[in-house]
Structures are given as structure tokens and as C-alpha cells.
Image (cartoon, rainbow, N blue to C red; front, side):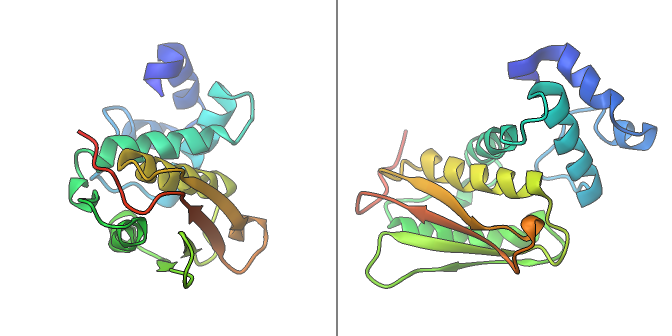
Length: 180
């Protein structure tokens, strides 16, 4: 966020947090550190208000950036090595318990299609900002491994009253072309 919006926006984000929340995010926010969901939700909301005039779609960019940075470093073992996109997204199922201490994420591969269905159950803790960040994360993850023609769409959202969050990732080419 600092990279795109600067120190003044970060101070505005911090100003929207409680003293306890501010102390949790005073230093660098680390991908491998544990942050309570309530803090993440408040942080996302503060970013929306400070950096996007209330437009929650900024969370898609935040999720995409998170995927690009963290899959290239901390979670690089999840990056693809020439497999098909379905296999890549199936590997991300194992990432869910590292990021959340509740809920589940599963990947369903429809027969004969170049797509996967990414099904999330946030067990009543879904927020609209987190769902948008998930869209960005799945898009950014696919882009980070160069899935050709990738499109990620939201089909349903628990934060909007659906039973689960469902995202569909579709692509145009047969295999992942390794970057680098």
C-alpha cells in the first residue's frame, strides 16, 4: 500500500485502527505472521476508505499483490513447474490452513473444461473485502505462474448471503509457462 499511496495514506489507515490494532501493524506486515481476522477486516476497511474513497474493489489489487509477492518468496513451493493450471490451483488448497484457522477451501475441476471452481466456506466470517481480496489472490497467483488467458470471476459470496463463496478460474492455454 505504501508503494502506491504513500506515507500519508498509511497514517490515515493507522488512524482508523484502535491503539491495540495499530501496535499489531506498526512494523512490517509479514505474510508468515498470524493476524486475527477482525484485524485483517478492519485493516482492509481502512485501506478502502483511505486509498479508494470507499471503493472495495481495491481489495482485488491488494489480493493480487499479496499473491505475486508471497508466492514468489515465502510460498514459492506452491508455484507451478510446467503442470496444468488445475494442478496448480489444487496445490493452493493446502495453503488455506496456513492462512486461516477456520473454514475450508476446495478446488473442483469440471470435466473437459479449462477451468476450476474454487469453493470457500468462511463459516460465517466472510467479509466483502476478504472475498474481493480472494479474487485478486487467485488472479495474482495465476498471473505469477503465467497461466495463459486467465480470468477469475466470483459466482457467489457468503458476505452477500450465499452458502459459500465460489470463484471460477478459466484459462485459454494448455499448460503453465514458467516465468523467469
